[in-house]
Amino acid sequence: MRCKTETLFVRLILIIVLLVGGCTDSDETDDHGNVTVFAAASTTNAITEISDLFTEETGINVTTNFASASALAQQIEFGADADIFISANQKWADELEKKQLAVKRETIVGNSIVIILPVNSTLIGDSPEILLQREVRSISMGDPSSVPAGTYGKEALEKLVLWEKIEDKVVSAKDVRSALAYVETSAAEAGIVYSTDAAISDKVKVVYKFPDDLMTDKISYPAMILKKAPNPKNAELFFDFLKNSKSMSVFEKYGFKVNLKSE
Image 1 (cartoon, rainbow, N blue to C red):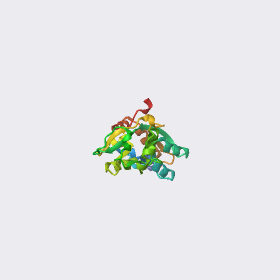
Image 2: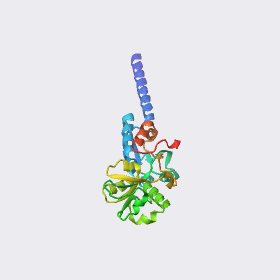
Image 3: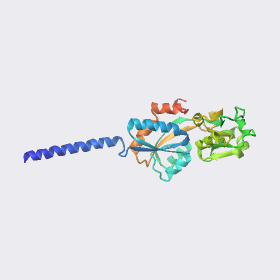
């Protein structure tokens, strides 16, 4: 009888040890091994590569949703399941913070905006006045009322006293990658996109880079952990991974500005 009692006791101890071990693992990551990232369209290539590196290192799958920052912010406001939000400007991050939808925020990288033409364009010029040429009938850019790249572009052109002269030519796109596509296919004779978007395409050429001082705020990308994140532990891990040297190298490879704190 004593032997059976001791055997049961030993089994009970083993079960407790296994349960405690399981609890320790779940403290580090979420049970379902996933993290959902909503990121501005201009970060598509960089965040896709960073997500792959993150999965390799942690085993956690990354689900991504790329669109304009405004569209993503609205999806989050309406309750979309997202763990991380990466905006292409501070405005939409501010909106979510005002509505108390974020728990942590940090600016990770920066960017610039440029004027692009189709690679085979015969237009000549290296100043923003190239947009005034008669041959430029359409200028594609993100919708200035909502898409950060478009908002920055409009502000810069207003300071150069060019906006009113070219406004009728503007074709508003749903996001910056759509604006890029218009120029790549020659559906527009010119476009305004981020320098990182121009850098990934061999179908466009850059003719002018807008100086940073034409924008009230520097072009910067804040990342946020969302308050209602379905996977808060994984969100913390991805948020920290975004800021490490591996991720910064990827951002730099695609033309983003890194080391913003030293500027």
